[in-house]
Length: 424
Image (cartoon, rainbow, N blue to C red; front, side):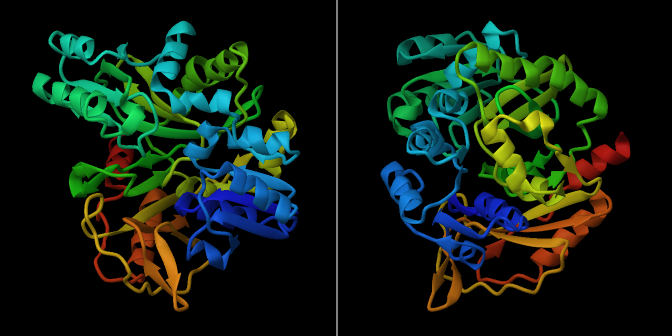
């Protein structure tokens, strides 16, 4: 089979490496791909949001299957356009991708179908939003309605901070039209859990749980980032919690989307908070998370391609999906200064890896046959081992064998999970 993967980050590299394990994956193309992905796929360049470009590539290379990995092209309707031209896709259509594309839509859906989430109000008028902030409980959370590269959520401790958040989104348009509407919601407390799931619109199969580390610095200090590392499984996500989430969140969400005429087929990501009142949804994503994918897929046993085909063909119920009982850790090596200003163009030296080690390239380009840094999050060093402690040790041992100037990583990925396990 010829497979086209849309996207060019660490998540896509993890997907491509897993797809390659299936002997049917004869040729894999990546649009745009990156300098590191080029070792595992034919990179076509271009833009992941270029729907005509993706269609042209699918036709030119006569691909048999397309995996649309990032949120932007899904929300824009890339899966619809490809399927209309006869190219089977893994990824939800536009009317289902709105679960991530509009926070107001997802909150209203949860309210309508009694899916547990934080209390909220939605505003299109800045003055009404500012008036609401005058009386709402603190802390409060201000969210841009649309996509904002994972940065459109601000936790505000004071009314002044909340008002500044509203003004920056709605009046200063720091997130463009994504902030034309905002959701102001209750601040929830408790451990966070990420659960990715496969679904064909009827059946839903959760993947192994994971824990992300969003802050740039050790001890969960510093600015929010796209993710500085992950571990799986998440020790807070017990069998009892998983059963409750299936009953109160996962199945109700799939049924709600079907009832709304928006069947969801692809990877549905549940961002959960385990509150004192039970699990609640913080957010939905309409695709694999990054960097959660980098610890979840190494634990998947069997063929990712077969599961993706089953999802696209509506036969997930008859397809085996199983995960190893091992643990995984991914440490992100970033450019010093990320997520703000950082330098690029430094040569990257990669070591040989064992079968339990994985290097997923996110922000790197090829220059004169040398891999060089080209982004904030440069790569993920991931490892699989028996037990979380050994997985964390192995991931850091791998990370320490990778070299580029201005490299930075958090040194406490997995510490909170290990403490939870030990205290549990």
